[in-house]
Picture 1 (cartoon, helix red, strand yellow):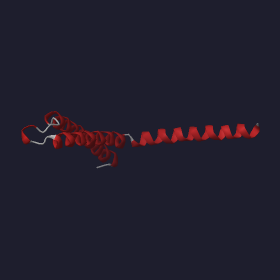
Picture 2 (cartoon, one colour):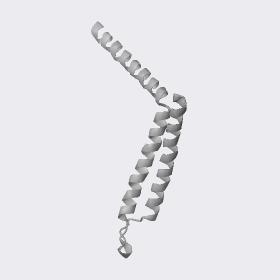
Picture 3 (spheres, helix red, strand yellow):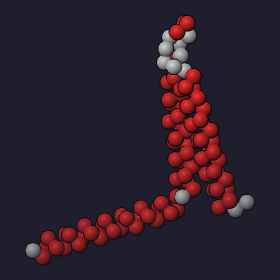
Picture 4 (cartoon, one colour):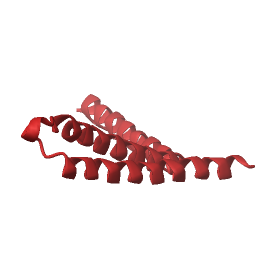
Length: 97
């Protein structure tokens, strides 16, 4: 198995599992209305659902970043290079005047 195939399998599995966890969290929040009716503390289910939704979002975003990491890295370095050039140009203009 090549490196790119392994990378794609890992990233797509992160995205798929993130979406599944997100759906599970939404279901937990919908069923656990934050009440204490009938001596059943459902606040735990509600809060757990919120944390599950957050985890699902992190998994999905992490999988997307892992899939596009090389492209994002190139864009970030390119942007940082442009910023550094602009700062250097401003300093040179200030020294001249």
